[in-house]
Length: 305
Image 1 (cartoon, rainbow, N blue to C red):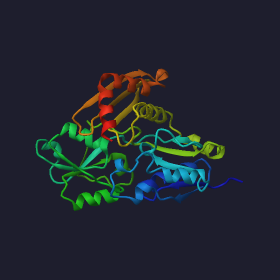
Image 2: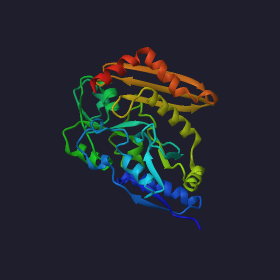
Image 3: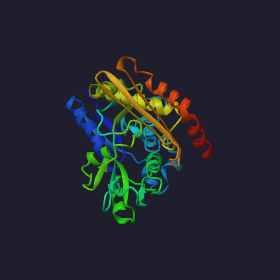
Image 4: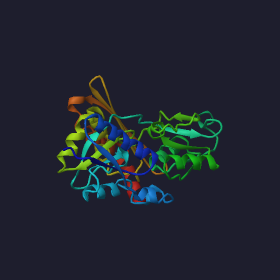
């Protein structure tokens, strides 16, 4: 008799949407599944900036504990929130096909892209977005914005801010992308942004086999390269590190960068390699970046903490 796979999820609208997609995929492949709601520390504290909260695993720790305690069988995460080193006893069961990796600006009034020389106030809790925005618009002010997608949109509407930065995938998945939004094509995303990952216990072969059919190999490869880059730079959510790998005509194209906290300094790397030789691309790119200006920036960030 098939058991019911218990899917652990945070309670936000976006988290539940993602977990429901996994539930539907399991059902399509003949596996019964149910959602189990778990609160995370990141959901409880909506005031402290993410980079002051220990950050690594802030949205995944509670689900990790539930997994290891066998309260749930699998956990569903936005992959960019998952630490590059998984806890002992937990492994990746599947990576879903990636949605949009882009960041977008939800703005009030006239689009800031048309008034780039006007002093504006933009809101985000992401230190990566803050650094890239200030690198491009050093005369702007950045304010902290926390909460789930719905909360952040409401805070923006109620505030004096000129705009706020969101992940396009998050808004689009739950049908909340406003008309007054533009994609920031120039902004490099967080490693694994736009991807959903399913985790399970390493000794749970049943759940691992159940998730295997909907693992997207290209997304899994690209996000692994991006996360290798992040790990090799010893970065987390408190470090302005960005990375994007994409597959075109049998080759992997990679872009990555690291910025100073104030956005004034930036080191970038760009490489293209055959897909068959791409396993160590993230690590190789990180080493080259460190040798070409990245180490100086990384040291300054470390000393600032």
